[in-house]
Length: 321
Image (tube, rainbow, N blue to C red; front, side, top):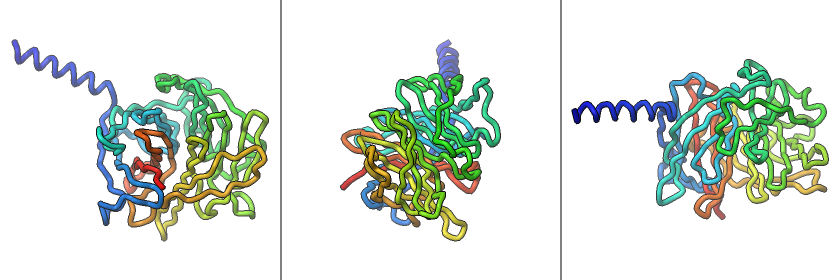
């Protein structure tokens, strides 16, 4: 009787664990595989990283990242219009990222409740609007939508969009070089960035919306690098820059600049860290910034393009002087 009861309890717990989230494979990754003790990349001090893999065909292509305030919950957006949520594990005695679990996948829905398909579903940018609402930007069919996911993201499975205004003329951007990154500051100012420069000035372009309409600014970043993600924290915008060519491979960097003021027409960022070979690299597109344990932490997330030759990497860094 005792063995039967324990077996029944074990089965019940197994079902409950399976219902909590889908299984994933998590592998720790060093900052530099050639020198595992290295932790510095400019002003970035490595706080651990993981490669995440799942047998679910929907998992991958992660292009945007948000975290709960304490860093224990992750919300990501796939460029095939899937919401990805899960739990992050940290070492008990430090801000060291150690794991990911509780994977859940839900469709990004259209106004009729159907999952976006094909070109309409190339979701790229993500930022909170407050009170559990999030803005999502799309490229190929360039637009921005708002989703009420709830503060705990409990409504990701059923949330339907509301259209948001974008600057005039952006619907004519090139096919795969559109509304790549979003950020919003504590005062409600919304920042939108596209991936590459669009004119002969070679400056990247940002658009700001502070309640009085959109205006354009120049971002004097490296023109050969795409701006693939942005996040605001404590008055500073952190942006993720990414480069790839078949001959050179991947490169990445984190740049930062103050939230632009009402009279600014251009911003020149500072580079706080570069991730170059032989460091661990992939196609980084998502970025989030939080305050945890007295440190400002920057986390970056890679888009594996649903390719077996690439990985979904999540890497954490502390910003140091």
